[in-house]
Amino acid sequence: MLREVWPFVGAQHRAARRVVLARLVRRDGPGSRPLGATVAVAADGTWRGSVSGGCVEGIVVEAARAVLGGAAPYVMSVVPGDHLLPWEDAPACDATLQVLIAPAPAEPVHGAITAALEEDRPLAVRVGLRPPYGWSVAAATDRFGGDGPAFVEELRPRRRLVLAGATDLAAVVAAVAERLDRTVVVVDPRPDHVRSGAFPAAAMVVRAWPDVWLADHRLGAGDAVVALSHDPRIDDRAVRAALAGDAGHVAALGSRATHAQRLRRLAGTPGLDRLVGPVGLDLGGSSLGETALSILAEMIAAENGRSGRRLRDGDLPIRAAEVPAHA
Image 1: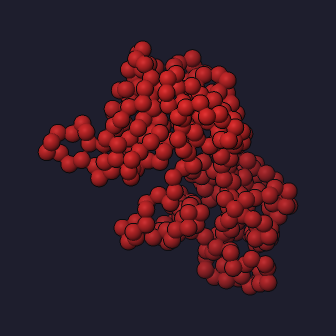
Image 2 (image 1 turned 135 degrees about the vertical axis):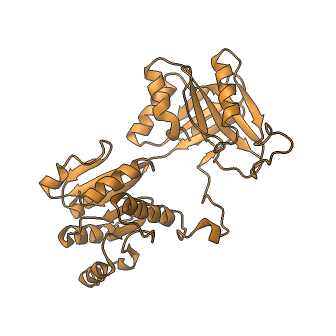
Image 3 (image 1 turned 135 degrees about the horizontal axis):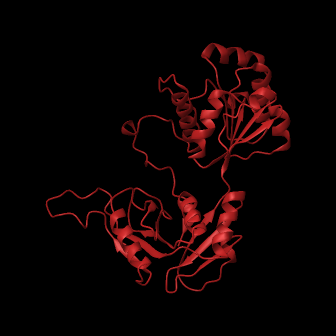
């Protein structure tokens, strides 16, 4: 999962510091991190990421530092708990991990990855699993030749989250959603609201009626629209336009009474049964941060076809799916 560590890799690249990546390329059983999980270790001693959620990071960071010091790149096998003493309990996830320890890609591959992530363009990234562990990129996985075993990760455009209403709550939702790898767009026709300066730099803040913006920007099944203005003139237009499109999650803020009024106003709107309201999971929180967490947690649960109930009360796998990546 190169996206998780790439800001760190990019900063080291700009500072002309070498970086070695430890990448989970194969596993023979269950684990806490998906294939493609990556630790990036820089020549100044700093590092980011994980391949096991904490069990073996010390081992792979040490291995990466050895490669930074001149050791040859290689694929290492590591089992969580191998470093423990005989009487210490090993983690339940005891699958053997195959971790590639090799330098981060140089130009032009580094630049291609950076551009794809910044511009939300799809890109297939391949690294060989035999010396010299070369990197290459292509528009799609089928463009690669069959020159030995390799690990391929498909970088996909981020999902979009459109927030109707440039409110204080929207600003907090946008800030948290950044860490969820969403492209956030805030749409509001009110000039003072869009000029508030409350939104993170990465969010796109647009002065427009949400239905007009949505008509010009087609959303996909992985995208979401959440109406947060608390103004029916804005929220209703956002909801109607979103339900007319392909967004997979359409929700609106408000109390149960507010939502009941909304449903009466929108009666007869095609797809109204898809509208989620009041938005959010039942966390009982009241602050802006707690409300934002409730809204985004429900969105993620809906995207993964989950109920949002406590993990201890269910028996499904904790992760809905592995990140699309293969060897």
